[in-house]
Amino acid sequence: MPYFPGETALDLEALKASVGPLVQTLREDIRFRKTRLVVEPGRFLTAESGLYVARVVTLKQSRGTTFAILDGGLNHHLSASGQFGQIIKRNFPIVAANRVDQKFDSVYEIAGPLCTPLDVLGHEVVLPGLEEGDLIAILQSGAYARTSSPHGFLSHPAPMELLVDGEEVIVARARGHYDDIIKGTFLEVAPA
Image (tube, rainbow, N blue to C red; front, side):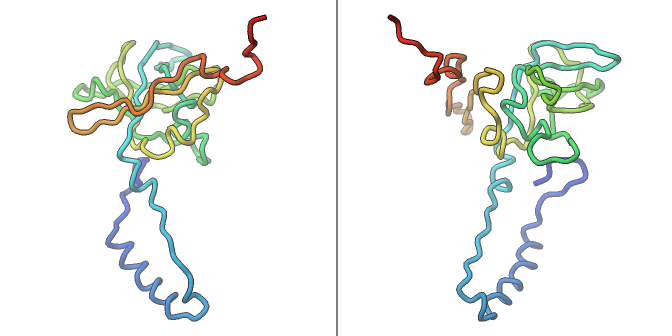
């Protein structure tokens, strides 16, 4: 799955051509005759099917760098922050969803709302000039966005999930609430 510049999509025909003979060789070897081969193509099948969208809540200048602070961050999309198995942080494809037809001429650090320097979703991202309220979309988010992210981290609620089927938009999972964070914890005390 191509997430980063210079990467190409998986060539299924080339994969078939190279794996087919390998499978045949295994089947002919008595040691592997009862071996069942399984391929788990989860990310390949789902990455392009999802995107993570967050709203710009403020823009901040610091030491010559412009930060676009979003209403969600690594707590909703740990993979995009680079904290999920990346040794070198590389950006997922990122666009300003409500400005895709405008000239990309400004550079931003795309950061979440958490009080940790790890909450950066994009480094030196070139986008159109942003304003508060703009929507930032992180593409290729159908795999590992919600499922690998620390919802509730620093008491931030989980994001809403929408399923889009043609013109129909379905709320697949409602937005979390701050009360969800403490449900079932020792903090709940029955009135005397």
